[in-house]
Amino acid sequence: GSGLLAELSFRLLDRRRATEARFHLEQAFLAAGADDVRRALAVESTQLRPADFALGLAYPNPFNPATHIDFALAVDSPARLNIYDVLGQRVRTLVDAPNLLRAGYYSVAWDGRDSQGRSVGNGLYFYRLDTPAYQRTGKMMLLK
Image 1 (tube, rainbow, N blue to C red):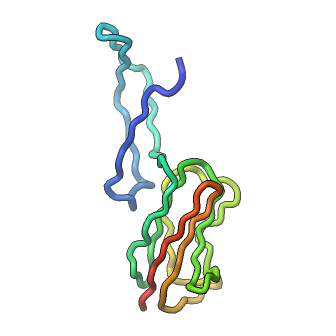
Image 2: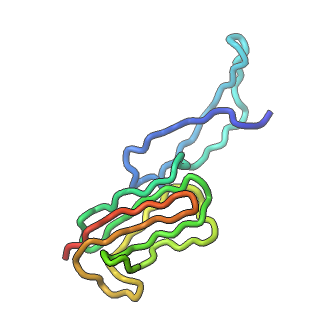
């Protein structure tokens, strides 16, 4: 037959390595009863897919000269990740995917520069992930 056979859940110990994470099933067994256990003939491997949308903490924070921002998309979705100053003005767009960005884990670096490539000043900055189903904001501090 076809359809969902099993659903496995894993917890990542280091989210920064989520995009590299893979698992491979060597073998699987199917049981229709105690006396009817069979080995599955083919088992496909897959990449990890997040169960929920998420926006991680910037790291390092405070930062100089760069920081990383992790986020997760539970389903294929349009996504935008912007950096804002304390006045709410957009400083830079790090991710702009108006079409679909594939479900998965992502890590984006920000080098403390604005959209024209100029270094921004010391201070508090906000990063915001926007998708149709999820919106979150985080804060980070640039110290030179």
